[in-house]
Image (cartoon, rainbow, N blue to C red):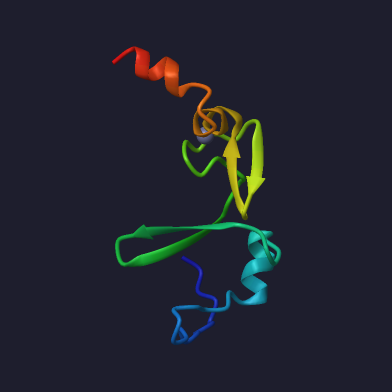
Length: 89
Ligand SMILES: [Zn+2]
């Protein structure tokens, strides 16, 4: 693993600033999404592709309140498929 030499202090709200050189290397800009992973005792930060926050699909996406939802999940939320699914029970 390449070390960057950056040491940052987490503020009282749990926030840190990702150094500009790291953001540039990841190809992420301000207001874009990133994902966090735990790898043992390490936190891995990865550029996030846009995907549905419920099922992970990356097709037919609509953005709502800074999150993405796919058409299928949106239909389920709006109740179009609820009757069909409940009829099977
Ligand atoms: Zn979905």
